[in-house]
Image (cartoon, rainbow, N blue to C red; front, side, top):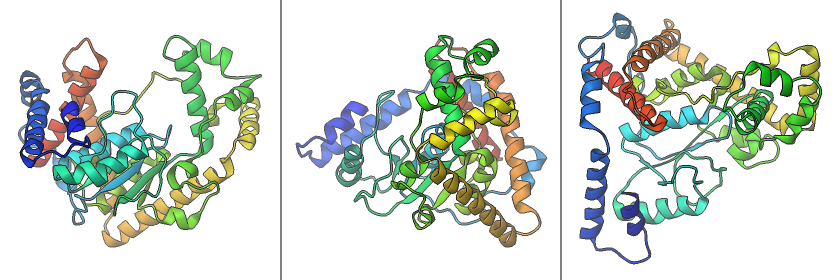
Length: 364
């Protein structure tokens, strides 16, 4: 399917019948890529295939009119929970008639040129009305028409620590994890600040708004900002504001790298001082702190507005529903995941389990 679409985007004009053939073949190949046996076995094993938990009666969908289908750009900033949110936006795209821009190989980076080519040239020729961008790509004011703009923000100190641990534990420990001995030997005490200096990640304001200093007016132009350490609240607020069903926002896979590391609040005083010293030297740190505080305050205002629009504790009930749905789906799909020799295949099967479970709940 990827090869056919690349051919369709070549400089040689294609007759309408060939473009139609490309779309048909791509659709057939997509259907064929999923095992019928896997689908059947997972669906039949769902605990909610018939009926649903009573708490869902208090968890309505679509409290507001649906906003999608609509074109959007999710600015996926590194180390802010972007993989989880990209999965959410991937389901939004799949369920609401939005075409995801780019067909990269594993590890490929989507470029501005590819976005421009897809949205302005290939997409109209193939009949796509709405697009979704959700890759690691710094935002740029490209000439691609109207679209919604989303991003996520994390406290820059926590983000810097997460990036350092990821680089050192996964790349240097040789085990793909941060066991206690490695952590205590290499990631604490003397040299901690130097390690942070050696593993720096770009600023969030630069990624999300393409500015060097925090710009409130530019931040106001973002349609929604997820706050990483308040992810569940962010997801519920996003669900309500954009009229989405549960199956779009219940995370079915959170990226983990088997990392186990000491959080800043659990560090001893000496390590905290080392981290603070490193943050003072981190370019863009002050701007990212402002951005984080702005996003957190904005989320508070959104929740207050939802409470006024939907009185009676609706937001709190929806938040409880999200927690319970995640627990139920997590317990079930971790048990029914079909054994496979490939981790990616396992993840695909677990993802499919979640999708089927959410669909079964809503149909009930």
